[in-house]
Image 1: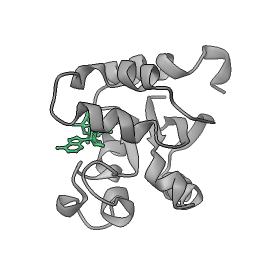
Image 2: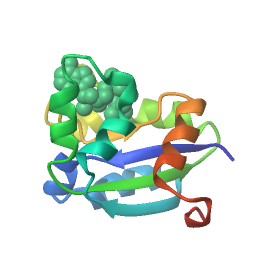
Image 3: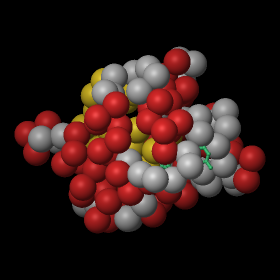
Image 4: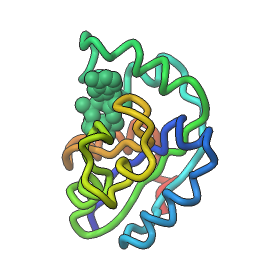
Length: 137
Ligand code: ATP
Ligand code: MG
């Protein structure tokens, strides 16, 4: 079964909507194969978002992602990567389709509540960045 990697970002954790987001994942057929909460260090956030290094939003992104706790998840479903990207909606919630997680929960383009891997290769890298194989059930 295909796996993807999700983060419930600091804005959502801070607003106590972890449960609402998890409920939407489950309702949409995703199985939670691993989950843990943590407070990312700057080094962890920089390494995770290395593809964005040098972009104008990079420093702000790292600051935001380290501003409070996050929930890290491995999600499992057929076609998980593409289906979860669709469920999340576009990066900017102002443009996100109605019924998507970002349309319903995100604050703005930076504080957009959720992360999802953008390809099967990214999913593999991101899962192994945060989880040991023994933590995925
Ligand atoms: P994610 O990788 O978190 O799933 P994404 O793939 O939709 O989101 P990316 O282009 O990979 O978007 O950007 C990573 C994250 O950086 C975004 O989710 C958002 O939090 C932040 N970000 C992206 N572009 C901007 C911007 N122009 N201004 C502020 N923050 C931004
Ligand atoms: Mg991305």
